[in-house]
Image (cartoon, rainbow, N blue to C red):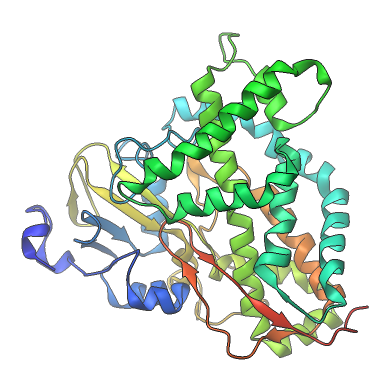
Length: 405
């Protein structure tokens, strides 16, 4: 680390060396490494890595940052900052423009819309788990955590299911990219979505009732259709969220449960505890670290932020803050209260959080019912994708093949 990489407005006592992409401890256990960072680093610190950026490690400070769109904008969502990154509406728009784009999408992710999907979600979760339950083993990421939510999303959007592997690979490449690689990783996704929009527009009278068809019919407040570049932007964001984040959250939740045989026994004996399992898993195992760019100079938390500074808000460790949750390192489904920011908060609260919760609840319930007690395969060493969206690349599990059947 060179002191010349630290801007003059950053006090020496706020500098802490951390690399969100290459820190060795993050590569070993990403959540434990971030929790350790929360204990060792200042609540607000500056790291010179990846172009230099601020990091916020405490729950209430994170909440203040993500709510303050006047000073901390979402228009740049990559660290280091990328000038030619794709627009991701409504995520990369600040209020009031953000509200316009969010209102177009919100009806499809509202509680009533998700509730109408519940029976289908439950039936499909049952089908996916049944496909592995009799085998006595599986790679949970490949065989369960990806097929379930990704297929649900692809059906909802109207994406061709035969392209499952292709689209998953495109999303993974995007989340692995940073710096100059972002534009190259974005281009094939834009091309795929553009072709899909054109094909759907050409056959708009086929009666299809999917999200892309609805977006083609959407109107702006002035009654005009949504411009093509804005349609692509919304579809791009949906593509990234639907093909990746729920898969990751499920994988981390199940890996944690695999290491807790006594909790597995409790869940098998009382399946109603799955709701609490989900809540505690979301508190400890979020997956999204959200960037912001400082829109104008301001002072917060005793430090000076300058316009153009990048800020990383690691939402997964908000729930590890001992000022918000007692003994946060303890995984306890019996907590009377819990607080986290896994889905963010404020204007940019995750649009799909109701659907994500419903998907995870259905899948976890079916896993407990059909598989029961299970463990991680011998000699397993986890491999992570780290950065803005964290992922577990594989999770080999085993169990008695007759369990739950």
